[in-house]
Length: 171
Length: 196
Length: 204
Image (cartoon, rainbow over the protein chains, first blue to last red):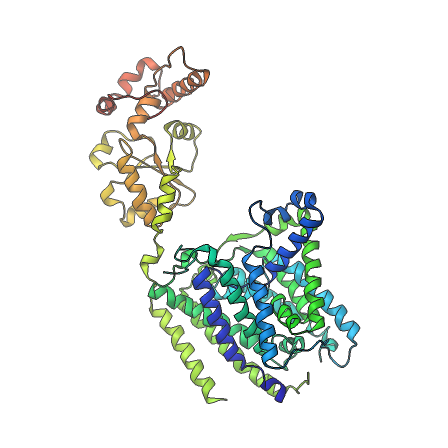
């Protein structure tokens, strides 16, 4: 398969990611993340549209303070970096292209619906678990935290359990 | 001695600059490893591509082993490293919802940003829908609050809970990972390739 | 199987085995000096004699008093329920067992503040938690709880309320009415003598 040749060897990628994680923890004392930036975005938008509602809500108000804008968050800058880094890598390997990637057995429309449902579930779940695959599972496992292992097993266990139901969307 | 920012060796004003640099490296590594393709990611659940398992496990073990060597040499003070708090029930349910989201959407938040950055429209839809999911959670938070805070065990590590020394736990983890790498390589050979 | 992978796997296993034999750097468990300074500076580790008396009277089970004076001094008089841990024995295994009991607030005291504060710093650096110091020590205890002085008539109502509370506490700890107090607290006579330079009511 010439296509996958262009990607890094997964173990090489894993070691690089591990070293990055190690360096991040060495410098900042905590690991990587991704869903936190989406939460900051939601808080910012709600605060702009309905400031009174945001202030009275028990959840938004946790992330709002007078001296700091909710977008002035570590994870927001990190995600801007992710976008830039991924774009760079994609550009160097010639993978930049507007496409909807889907199995030949399903239509573009059903792929987009599934993506939307998946995103919805991930947004919801990441709040319950206090982090997503990067923040809770990967960084949690690196520090050997119990929460990280529970999150990892729960995410992958459920995905495997339901894999059969959704097989036609992928293979 | 690290971690640099919590120990005040590096000024906290560097935080955002470091975040940006870390993010660029994170995005570059994920994209280069193939995490920007949902069909490649989903392969782990159907046995035709185990890239997720390989990268994920290798990264976690590299970082964990490195971290505890750093501690031994005295480069890092583990008591200042953030161990995420364990809320058993909330984490399990959250993980299950995310697992369902993973098998439906094919991405997780970090990988969806990578895929969106190189133009995958499904990833853009995924990450936008994620915002709606967070919004729903936040709006219903008063109802969910007691569940969200239930089963709190503190900021504990697995080996503490199991009562094992770090070294023994790490060796078990390494053996499990190596076993998984070997078994998945056998499975991948058996399953017919999926072109994507 | 790829030969490179076998070598890499072996390296990983060796690194893991290495961790079994390495003990983490013991210095790393210490509280950083700046954090310790902050805790000392904000004075939250002090507990006043009035608060302590209140908690003992209420039968608060989390109170664990630690007398850090020498065994000889402690043999003369100790607060109710206190355990004597002389400064020299602070880091022994026995003391550790006392100071790591679950659900307890450990309150160090001596005649004044100094020894108790030293004990607090040493134990805190040893990584122990929920540690407190009795502000003013036994001297203040005698002055404010055992032998409270009535406030001057010109003082505000609060001073009288405080005095009433202290009188109650005094009766509780001396076991009888004010008249009997002198004979009951005879063993503290040497303590009271040292506190000639009394300050104003309320603050020791």
